[in-house]
Amino acid sequence: MKKILIPMLCLTSLFLLRPAVAEMKCEMDFQLKSWSVFYKSGKGSGTVTCDNGKKARVSIRTHGGGITFGKSNITGHGEFKNVPSMQDIYGSYASAGGHAGVVKSASAQSLSKDDITLDISGTGTGVDLGFDFGDFKISRYSKK
Image (cartoon, rainbow, N blue to C red; front, side):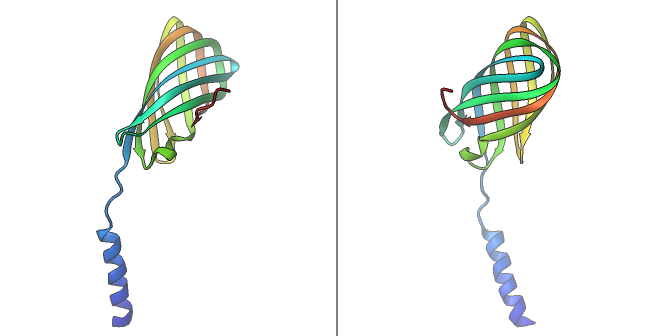
């Protein structure tokens, strides 16, 4: 029994003494142009800045569908929480939202990907009305 117990205690103490990995907080400023007629599509770009000093230029694509009509141009800000590393900001975030606006509009949304949350808000111009589901994809910047 001692032969098993001592190695188990050693392994357990290694995990307990391991330093905690600090998760970063990051912010994103972005611009997004979108249109919708049942199907919603948007394209934009932004800059992500993390509290460890790292920065990245990103491309944004949105896709979805629902009962939605309109066209908009949004300037926004987002806050990421629970980010293990800068590489983890990339990927698709699940989204659902309602929107309405004529000439000037504002919106806010909370998105998620794994344990990371992204809260975004923005203001802009356009005409839009509806409710949609879809994804908000962040990738490394490209001019496409």
